[in-house]
Amino acid sequence: MRKKFTSVEKHEAVKRYLTSTMSYRQLAKQIGIDYSALRYWVKLVEYHGDQAFVFPYTKYSVAFKLKVIQFIEEKGYSIREASALFHIPLYKVFGCL
Image (cartoon, rainbow, N blue to C red; front, side, top):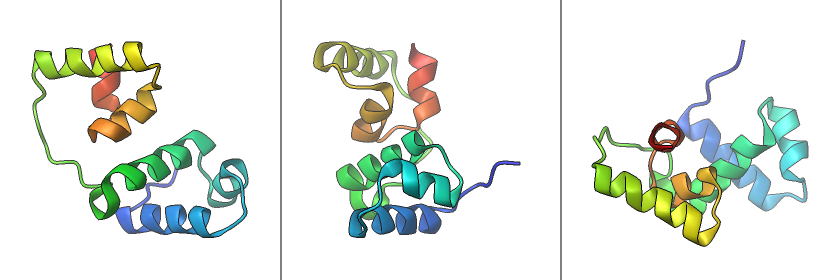
């Protein structure tokens, strides 16, 4: 069964990544997650600091969802990076597409 990480554990993993010479893959393997999830956590912290893992419940408007999709297409961002930048849960972005 997959472990659910608390926001504190996620912050600790990001700090560990940023202060070590380990690659995303090495650290992710060590803590038992996919490296793309760790990369997503790092981006969230980069964009939102201490509030990175606090996602308020929000119903996103169609206009906002379209803005995110257009941003992804125009800027060539990945879905994960756009999710981190706009600070919306990843599953909400997938729900738009």
